[in-house]
Length: 119
Image 1 (tube, one colour):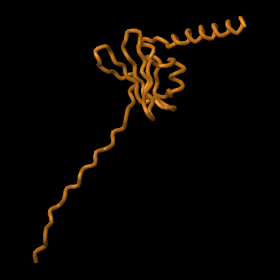
Image 2: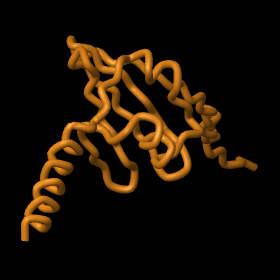
Image 3: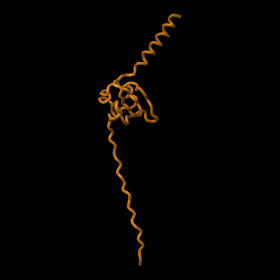
């Protein structure tokens, strides 16, 4: 009976230790390591679990840094669409710049005035 009690106590102790295993990061951790090719699994394996996870379809990971600023990463299974840093003033800065190709603007065709041939 004492052995079962000891096992239960060790399991409870292990659970309390695992609660505090969210990694604390600095901004430089993300600036040096985040890449657009990183998917959800590689982000979690590199940076650990975020403070908050949200999103529907696109997974949004919010990491709280040691100085109480934030890094927000929008990703899916195969890549990262954006990574932004938010400072204490609320201003945002891109950590990943993904160049998008602007679609050419299509000029509207001007309508020619209707001319009735007068013969």
